[in-house]
Image (cartoon, rainbow over all chains, first blue to last red; front, side, top):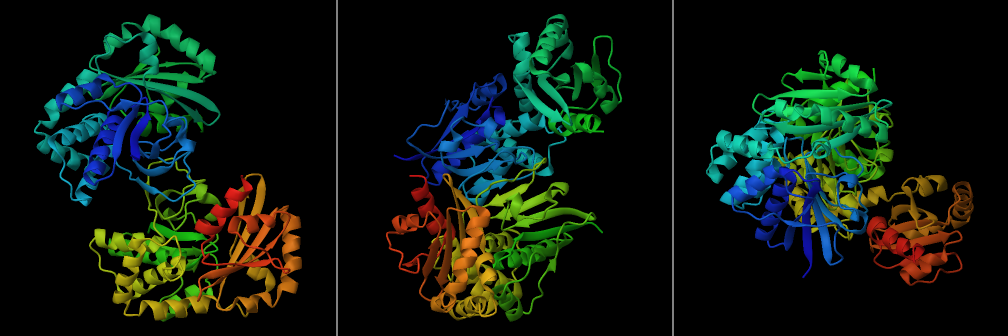
Amino acid sequence: MEKTLIFGHKNPDTDSICSAIAYADLKNKLNVNAEAARLGVVSKETQFALDYFGMEAPQQIEKVDEQVKEVILVDHNEFQQTVDNIKDVRIAEVIDHHRISNFETKEPLYFRAEPVGCTATILNKMYKENGVPVSKEIAGLLLSAIISDSLLLKSPTCTKEDVDAAYELAEIAGVNLETYGLEMLQAGADLSDKTVTELLTMDAKEFSMGDAKVEIAQVNAVDTSKIYAFQDDINPEIAQIIKDKDLDLFLFVVTDILNNDSEVLALGEGKEKVESAFGVELDHNNRALLKGVVSRKKQIVTALTEEFTK
Amino acid sequence: MEKTLIFGHKNPDTDSICSAIAYADLKNKLNVNAEAARLGVVSKETQFALDYFGMEAPQQIEKVDEQVKEVILVDHNEFQQTVDNIKDVRIAEVIDHHRISNFETKEPLYFRAEPVGCTATILNKMYKENGVPVSKEIAGLLLSAIISDSLLLKSPTCTKEDVDAAYELAEIAGVNLETYGLEMLQAGADLSDKTVTELLTMDAKEFSMGDAKVEIAQVNAVDTSKIYAFQDDINPEIAQIIKDKDLDLFLFVVTDILNNDSEVLALGEGKEKVESAFGVELDHNNRALLKGVVSRKKQIVTALTEEFTK
């Protein structure tokens, strides 16, 4: 039987996994033969949410099989973030909250992007528009996605729509938003079993800023000093990455999920740009505390891009 | 005062003009300071609709002024079809029913594309979603856009949603869909004042099909023989276009709006592809009748692309 496959981006976060599960659930209830999938391993944070609400992780896929009729992308649209054989399949829909870039189709499709903090917020609306009630389990997953993307509603990417959806979903899921949210974020911030290489690559993105190449890696932590206890191991690894990729700056961002600050480590020729962008001084370890900074997209990339393109 | 500018594609058709006017009206009723604009001259068909419902054509613009805060694109998304300085302005929204291609933004935005036959069909839904009643005049314009894009609901691009919206809007506009629709299409099909050059360029699009370059020009007519009475003037103009653009095929499509057929004229090295694609023989004038073919996008481009990429 022909089926529709629904998945989020590579290196999936909680929104990518939970929105895929939820949209497949909604489609099934609307009598569409849809299945969720994922393009990478499940993080500890996501696993906590799945376990808490008694749900299974979707199947992991490397590419889309030939018997798949069409695919739906959630939480992403850029082709470099999706399955490698995306050009061979029909994209029926996209539900997303990111900028649009490196995306194209041959045929008209259903494309819904909204400037909110989380794909799950749009999906919560779509359940209502279709008159389908959200089950307790799905409400829990959608809530988890919003908490993850908004760092418990603290990120500047979080809109009123996200906040309203989160409280509404917490009610259906039968959890206290603050208590559950912190537990989930803490589960994700358990970095005790990670190698230094994993810390520097698990959520790293490269950006072009003017003529400069900048890589920014981010991890969430409960205690930033525990990460920087390993700085002697971190420094040479970053130096190697800078050399291999010919970077002007590597910024390692350790975000304190309890205080909503970030302690950053800046290495590379362009490290003084971090000082001017945020009005701070790097200490003798090349580190600085950025008060109130939690969003790579909205706070770090914008401020640094401005410095590098001045 | 900061304002939002709303416009459709260059070389605007009735959907591009009427959807811009309607969406500006909806935005104004939602207390957003929005204004419609257009990126080219108003066709006879569109002018008929505007006059019939006592509406003014929106302002014509060449580029977006600096005091404009943001823009909304309706009925298109590809950058080559929009204002030349699109990269200097913030795109707040896109409402469209075409494929997505050559489009990108730096920031998340509201992007709504649906695989229906006309942008006006989506706008009719948006009035309802926002609880704003559609006025008689706006209903008339939205209806005109649907009739135009669907060739009076006959095109294979027309969906059930378009048909339902058209009947609903005709009711509000107080017109008989068939009678009004035919009158409007006939007004647009009055080609008596057009030069041969205008006929070949007023709605021409170039396509890459495999290694071949193909240009397809389309006009609507009530009597196709009236157009082909000028074939002796048409042939050398097409030959010159083929030479100038190094085309493999130029297909001139004259669509009979009463019988919903098209009489085509094929010139260029690749003209036999037209014969194999549609199972017809070109006569001694290089013309053939394509029964039931009215849609360039859904019927002509797809069939020819298949032939050229075999």
